[in-house]
Image 1 (cartoon, rainbow, N blue to C red):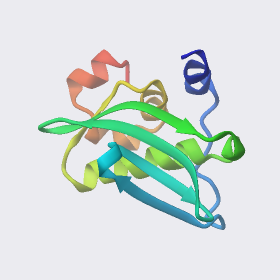
Image 2 (image 1 turned 135 degrees about the vertical axis):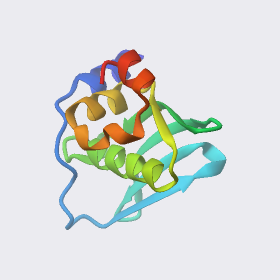
Image 3 (image 1 turned 60 degrees about the vertical axis):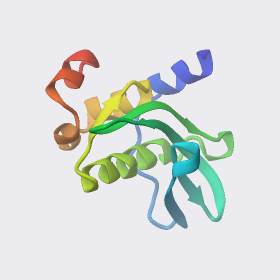
Image 4 (image 1 turned 180 degrees about the horizontal axis):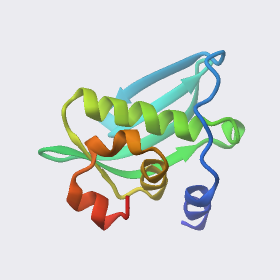
Length: 120
């Protein structure tokens, strides 16, 4: 758990450069979004499906991909997908909540109640 808290406090970086070979997918059986770089799993963001939204529980960047903006990239892509599906995001995951605080352009995918609860 301590490792997860450390990641949530790391500085948020801009999404990784477009030169990386990205593949974003929704692994529905595992309830997580995944970001693959050059065919290798680089990061994932776990979620629970609710009636009107996705409750984000944990986001992790694999050690070999840390420091390249991969966390911010998967957060942005996951929130874009929430928006595309006309759902709401519930940011229980500290990293997703921190990303939302730093990126007001995603306020529309978080309810006023969740913004208040997670200080977004």
